[in-house]
Length: 195
Image 1: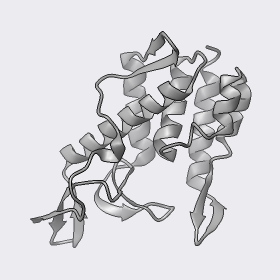
Image 2: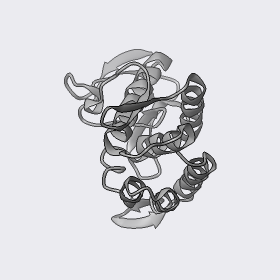
Image 3: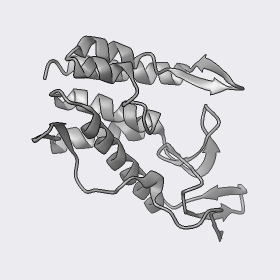
């Protein structure tokens, strides 16, 4: 293997901070710590949903992706290895974990900033998973958040189901994978009970 530099200069991953620990701020002055069990459940669930690939690939929407569902951007500054047997660019397992940690931290921060009602652990996990998967701004612009912040938990869970489409050749198409993921998030959110 030989090492190659990514095409971009130095950067911070998606401007996401890599804060340690997970806690969901639910309202000004209130914080709901996520238990160790909930954190490990969320991490395990997200890794299963995203899959794991050390080689650069295109996801179902056509984005270059690596590690645990990390979408590569021009801001990323990664060192790739060229596997001479497969002719694929790869990162190390440690780099995949670092990207995942940064992405998770960003998703937790986004949910913390946007949600103004109380959540239980399962509801928080479902929203973090949704935010992790859909990327910057998805939760903040969603009907799900609007309904949730009006304390319509049932409506918010159902609104997550609307986020099951990808753009292929400039047209929106329903993605079976996203449909399954949104249904699982809805069930997790609802099965968690009330706040």
